[in-house]
Image 1 (tube, rainbow, N blue to C red):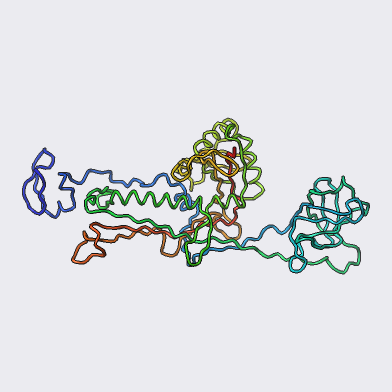
Image 2 (cartoon, rainbow, N blue to C red):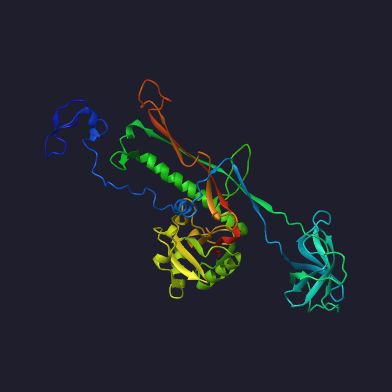
Length: 447
């Protein structure tokens, strides 16, 4: 017989006996179906086990939840002060005084370019040394008049178009009265903007009984659960694929980690017909080593590139035992190898298999098949700043907010609206921070 809330009568619930219950106990039960609160596991099971990025940024970049008080996050970037150059054109290349046009911008007024009178340089293509005797500009690029180190004439074999030169130092005669000028080293500024990320959901009265228990005291609506998972999927996709756009009066869009990697990081490509090879990973690590980043790198991989990587690296490189994997990465199922002194921690990144976010396409110079793509992240500490290279920062008071709006089913005589159920709103305002994007990498099929 069915349960009748509010009446203390013996009732058969399971067919195995008779018990007396009062209406207060029954009020929270699914009495219309003749069901009681189920027996459940006392310990809480993680609801979202597949969202690596949220777990990574919270575990590794412990300051990631620091509050922002502005919708723009900016930081100073001082690039390396010493420069080399490429010779784009030259005149007098067979005389004692050649004039080189370089790929260094200069306007001749405020920006004189990099090289100064007295600078000594080395032509990488021939190994010949020279010295700058005058500087100028042509069409917005720096020109330098140069003498060969021994004052003899230049030749095509010693310097020509497309040769590369590197700065060695300076050289001056006895009794010289100056250093040739001064260079102005001003840092550039990079920035990202916060992205306001939202979802709403409704739970109609007829499905309010569809709830899931977390523990003996806590439960949530099934529809709420679906939307929370999709909310996190939105968040994770924006962290990876976002493109920066600043609109003071409209919708800001945050720059994603892939845009950082594509703009300033290191890249290696391969043919999907061949698959990623040991040489491809070696080439990427050769590019990353001079960036002087962390010795622990995290590679988020699609399923195909991860399988091919295991085949390519497994027999040839030292596998990192579990007890040597950094504690912050524990429990995230990484497969780790040591290559060129770098410990690369590979993991399957489920987002790259989500065809609703990244539909499968034939790879080309512009299209990426993310099943055959890996994003290499450097969470190491930034010298001087003492912060992690990659962080996710949240607007003050806006880190994953959920609010419920009661409708006609709410208690009392007043309701927020006339909806026959309740509504929920989810909101998060966040931005990605990557201080040194040159330490990021990507490896992918492009044909």
